[in-house]
Length: 95
Image 1 (cartoon, rainbow, N blue to C red):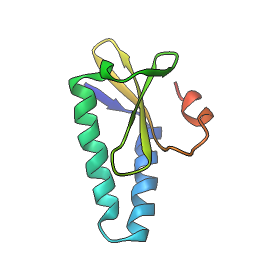
Image 2 (image 1 turned 180 degrees about the horizontal axis):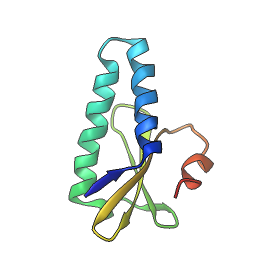
Image 3 (image 1 turned 90 degrees about the vertical axis):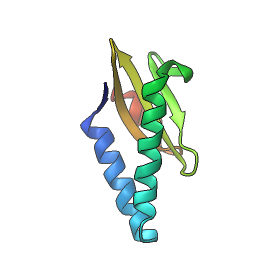
């Protein structure tokens, strides 16, 4: 099961609002891409390299965002959906 931590949900909401402010429906396009990426992660989470301890990262295709997650048993825990230029200590502190 894929579990989204509150911080990751907040990241997505913040990005959605920012993109909607730029162009109508662009925020929804962002959410759609992130959700499609979640599906890819669900199918094969170990496809992505570890970037810090047990945290893995996947890059979004059309938006400059990365999804940070780790596995705990059969669960996938998403700790961040962050802009790629964001300070890495943000997601490192969340694990």
